[in-house]
Image (cartoon, rainbow, N blue to C red):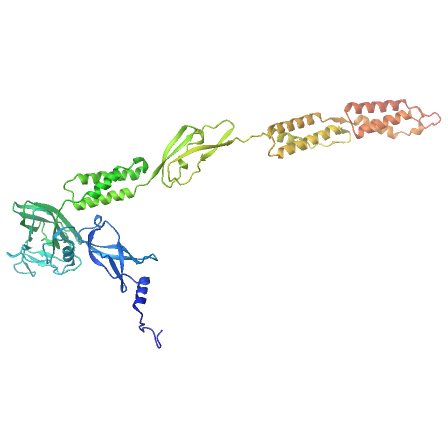
Length: 550
């Protein structure tokens, strides 16, 4: 920073620093020029950024498809700042659209017209080296209408507004029912006549353009004016020889005619080579390779392009428009691929899927697949995903899962547990211990089988059979009689009885007690009770003991 510098103090930088700043933050110097076609224009090969020039590539656009002659449009380009570092900058140019092969560009009331200068630069056919002049015997073209102020004996007056860049801005206005006429000398051949008008004062009007040749005068075209709108009219004429023609613009309603500019171009046979080449390319395409909607759109543009090629009166604009439309339709084509679903050698389905989409929704229903015995259908291979080529899908099978039915076993376990069985339901009843333990063992085994996810059906069935058998074999014994008999035994005072039979009684009582504690069967219990009872009946009182009473 310079000593004593403050806000607004200029700081000197080198040219190299300035260029570096402009490359990083600046813009290219404005480009204003003309454009006829991508190969014929005033677009420069370089642009200036800072103090340096850089090569530029301009975008190849079809500007004519959406604009008219002498419109000014913006076209973009890419300037290469440093190729090694891949540094570029987006640049723009303002271009005026000039029809090819212009012969006249008369910008009315605009002697310094840029449009006229652009036409001169674009065409070697141009015959008017100035943008406007009056016709005399010494020249070959010019205005036949008298120009003056808005009074007096004149045919037309100048409109107050003008623009060097826009030929539609200014022009002439006929007065008092007069016409606007020009004489132009043209060579033999076909020519396109252009008339540019603008709805000044927000007024619409209807006009016509007559042409006078050596064959007479005839109406060439209507040249109506829309309020506040720039409008271009054009029509073709053919001359059998070089001659001077007269173009006369007159009103067809109560509004006097107006004119912004008038032009003529040599109508040459348009070059249809590109269009024919593209048609051949499109014709070689296979319909099944493309989605139906994009293919249908292409065919419509293809038919229109073919009509343009076959039309001997097609203009350069017609050919350009047909080429642009056909190129757009071709570029809009969406690729599709055939996908086939096969089950063995049988084709279940053949369909088409758009490039990059999945064929999953096109797959046949599982019910359409023939499944081998012992297998189950689980899907298709290869796996579904974005399709970028023709594909063939085949079904995938796996071993059918073994279905094991455990419902009956579970129900039997639930039922037995619901009984809440106990070895001794009450003091007078008991289950045979062996049968009770056998049931618990079968019940535990059944539960293990239920919890075993790998258990086979035969194991489940065996567990159920064992459980049913164990439950059926569970034996309940009635201990009432044996307990009563044993209780009676225990209530005796054996000292009051004779010794005979006491040993047998003790043995019978021990056997009965064993059955009470661990009954083996109802018969064994009953037999023990009966044996004890019989020994009790055989006891005899001791006569020496008067208290004995049995």
